[in-house]
Each structure stands twice: as C-alpha cells, then as structure tokens.
Length: 161
Image (cartoon, rainbow, N blue to C red; front, side, top):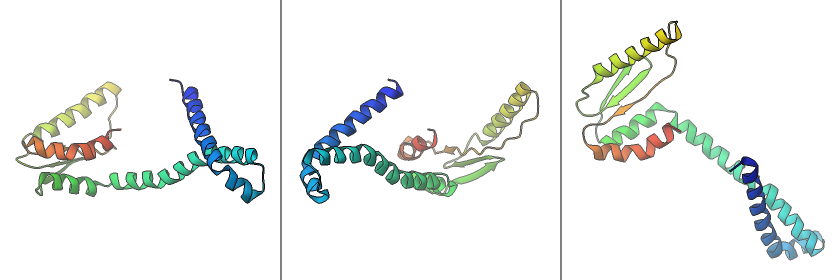
C-alpha cells in the first residue's frame, strides 16, 4: 500500500471520528462559542483531524526518548541478563566487543579468533586497514534454554530493529 493511500485512510478515519464527536459535542461547543450547530460540528471535526495526531506525537516523543536512553545503557542490559540467568556471570571485553556469559563460557577464544578473522577479511576486501569503531554486546547464557527464553523477548526484540 502506498504512503499516500495510507495517509488518506488515516485522514478519513480521523474525519469520521471527528464528525461523530462533532455530533456529540456540537451543541455544547455551539452554546459555548455562540455558533450555529453545523459550524460547531465542522470545528470539532477539524480540531480532531489536526489535534489528535499532534497530541499523540506530543505524548509519544518523551516515552520514546526515555526508552531509547534506558536501552542504550550497558548497565541495564547486564542487570537484565544477570537477573534472567540468576547469577552474576562473567563480563569479558575484547576491544569494542563486550561479552557477558553465564555458565562455563566455552568458546570465548573461538569468538575472539572469529572476530579478528572477520576484521582482517574485511580489511582485505576494502584494501585498507579497518578500525573498529562500533560496540557489540552479545550475551551468552548457560545451556539452560529457559533462561535465554526469559531474556530474549524483552531485550533482543528492541536491540535489532
């Protein structure tokens, strides 16, 4: 569906809701502003078409900003992972990569080797040395799948969009 068609559908729904509100509130608005009933209905409809989307945006922006600030903090990730695993776990930093794991942590050397091999292959591909400037924070849980299932829906769905 094209964006223009979606906007028209949104406009029609807002107009329908506004017209219904105009019929319900038209007499009060007409008495309050000393206007004819039909003009009050049009005024309420127009206020709904303009005001409702604006109100939703004004209410959602602070919520989205606060959520983004909370989700960008590594301490929040680590606290949630520790709570999900039920243990302190181990935190390892490999350059720009931070790895937290619970359980035995087998495979850390392999992960480090794979990251370095990937960086070298990419440097060969682009033909110049590559400096890693991003941060990556994978989490490895112990062999208990239940612990991962508790953690994944709350965190991973927000991380990779």
